Image (cartoon, rainbow, N blue to C red; front, top):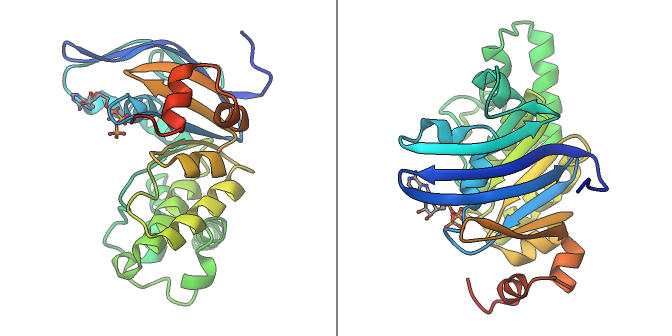
Amino acid sequence: MTPDFDVALTVDQLSLWYGERQALHNINLHIPRQQITALIGPSGCGKSTLLRCFNRMNDVIDNCRISGEILLEQESVLHGQQDLSALRRRVGMVFQRPNPFPKSIYENVIYGLRLQGVRDRRVLNEACERALRAAALWGEVKDHLGQNALTLSSGQQQRLVIARAIAIEPEVLLLDEPTSALDPISTLVIEELMHSLKQHFTLVLVTHNMQQASRVSDYTAFMHNGALVEFGETDRIFTSPKVRRTEDYITGRYG
Ligand SMILES: Nc1ncnc2c1ncn2[C@@H]1O[C@H](COP(=O)(O)OP(=O)(O)OP(=O)(O)O)[C@@H](O)[C@H]1O
């Protein structure tokens, strides 16, 4: 069925196996452009596995086999001529634990641009400021960009990692439980940040936190046992789910 929104990613009959064990079962899903889509579901249901398919992070896992297709703006992600580093420039990722490099704040942010061969100091400085502003960190770090990134608080480190990811202007940003290692205040800061980032990027968020999914996401996909059970606008999923299993999960009856 054609969705009534602009599509950034199309998942078409996607199945995935780790060795003999099937972890994703025939997933069909459209991820809306410049919106936040939350992937929710009980532990082990395949949320992170699906997220990792979007930038082919599963490629490094031995015995991982995939069938079906994912399209990024109509181009094949899984097959075809897609170059992995080009794909990952278009589809950035932020993990559960902040993982800045043991370098200065400045060098962290411009890391991807340096890899791309950008040398012009003015271009790098502007990109650094732009990314830090977009990641709501500029005000806190602008006077000590040379400081080692590991001296920042975890909440600041996570915003720095987001700045690093967006400095190269990806189309899609994948967020795998980005606040689960953070305190409630840092969590709220990142949630507000996600809200502003969707003006420029498509966000896909894996979260265990139902309040977070309902607070920040526009669309929600509920997964169970490797299958997509239900997808729709977040307000609808949380107020009138069509499937009993979704209702049981979001009302805390299991998971
Ligand atoms: N590298 C791997 N090798 C083998 N099996 C894996 C691997 N990664 C995940 N799995 C299995 O695939 C299934 C889905 O895991 P996945 O991490 O995607 O679930 P999840 O919904 O993100 O879970 P959680 O919420 O606990 O992070 C699980 O049964 C898990 O044990």
